[in-house]
Amino acid sequence: MAVDIEIVPACAAHCQSIGERLRLSDEVEVWRAGRVGPVEALRRSMSQSTAFTVLIDGQPEIMYGVGDLDVLAGIGGVWLLGTDAIARNWRWFLRATAEGLPSLFTRHTVLRNAVDRDNFPSLRWLKWLGATFLTEVDVHGYPFIVFELRK
Image (tube, rainbow, N blue to C red; front, side, top):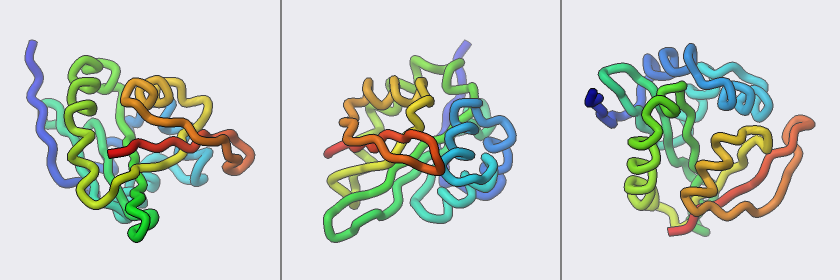
């Protein structure tokens, strides 16, 4: 059964819809990182970046974006949060993120962020995408791993 997939600019309604159904590994990570719930984490991330939503069969399922970390050095902050639709559509997700990654480098030559050391699905995906893991940092008492992707 084919699914209809569309990528659109992110909006507040998408934050609510995705946040209410965020996959558990992402929900734990946003709490550990920012001490906020999923909806607020999505709103903050969206407001600080150029953000997009992936609609699967018309339903908001994934939000991602890139914001500026260091404009002069060409470093952007990249992020992605989603629902369990990622696991249900994993073949499409892997293909789409690999093919779409170059388009995220419009303003930056390096994309960087930190991922919760316990977020195994995200760590496995980032490794598959070719991310370099740089160092471990403490965020509110939890270990996070700084990663980067290069153009």
